[in-house]
Amino acid sequence: MSDPVFVVDKDERLVDVNETGAALLDDEGTALGRSVTEVMPSYDSLPDSNASADADVVIESDSGPRYFDINRSTLTDQTGSVIGKLLIYRDVTERRIAEERFQRLIERSSDMVTILDEVGEFTYVSQPVEKILGYEPTELVGENVVEYIHPDDRRNVAEDLAKYVDDYGYSGTYVVRFRDAAGNWRFIEARATNLLADPFVEGIVLNSRDVTEQLQRKQRLERQNERLDQFASIVAHDLRNPLNVASGRLSLLERDIASHDASIGAIQEQLERMESIIDDSLTLARSGETVTETDTVNLEMVAYDAWQSVETGGATLVVETTLQLDGDRNRLRNIFENLFRNSVEHNESTDLTVEVGSLPDGVGFYVEDTGTGIPSQERDAVFEQGYTTNTEGTGFGLAIVKDIVQAHGWEISVTEAESGGARFVVECHESPMVNQTETT
Image 1: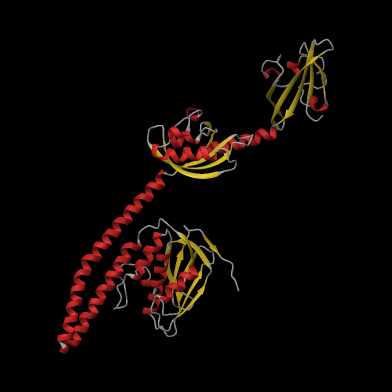
Image 2 (image 1 turned 30 degrees about the horizontal axis):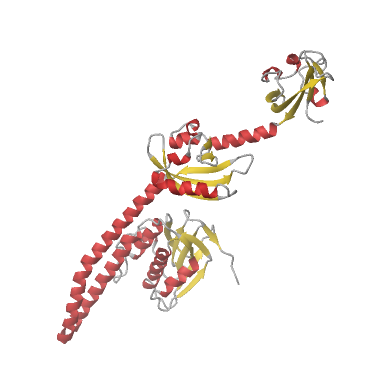
């Protein structure tokens, strides 16, 4: 037998030991016949040494502490009289180290780990609950989780607990309001896994984290976006009404005053410019709204769609990317529309090529052209509202681009392309991005 085995007589003297057990003795050479408390490590730490039961001990060795589960059996003679005990030491050091490592990881995690029984009572609560909710773990053990959940959220949790209690392996994610020790409601996101049938767990495991600040921040952003929409709508309404009146009057003038064609043309041009300014102002007001909901967007498809909606003359589009990223598709299309329009309006479009591609590190994209480029001393100013070198432009296009990029949590810069043209670089560090496999 590889486990240490010891035989002790009724007078607590060691009478036999196997080779593995002998290696644990304090004095291997003269141990037999001596009191076990003198030669067997940690023997005196065993609970009630006269009982026949399992126990745990720690024995110090040259390589560090070793952990043993000890099985004790009573030995009797043919008449049934007790003559001693048999002790089998089972080395569980590796298991105990693994358990301790796991326990420390849980206790030092920023998330809470809890276990519920089949009726929803806590059977285990990890230490982070004190930092997150203000409770000592022992305060919650034996309590029913439903009693701590906001009344408006209880029904769904209780129904799912009853519905899936027999569904071993079931997993689900819940966001509920949970009462903390101060009586405040905290938004808790919990990932539940049914391990009731697992003999080592026997419970529903909850991995939970506090998402109160994230949800409150999202609500603030949504309210901010609503206010921006209201502002933009008011501006649009107040400016468009007189613009529509002026356009209507201009139509009447065109029929009655043929000799003022030049003046009428100038008025018409200015009215159209006012309408462009209004459109760009509305887009600018909304472009900075923080992106709170995203979808997986195919960059190649968005670029081609945007190209079709811009007057590009004789310019050519080349797309050298199969990149996908999480973003707001409509606002990403607006980025490309404004960058494409900027290239076409500031260069001769006949021989102009505009290229869209991925950055080498795979965390962004670029849009560059073969035009005349942007002087280095002007590059910091091109994203400012109202800045333009085109007398017919509003100067809002690149400001809109910058706002949309920043609303996604990204960064944009402008430099010079190898051809000498303008190169706009968008770095998307805050967005998970993947390169699709090229297909031929």
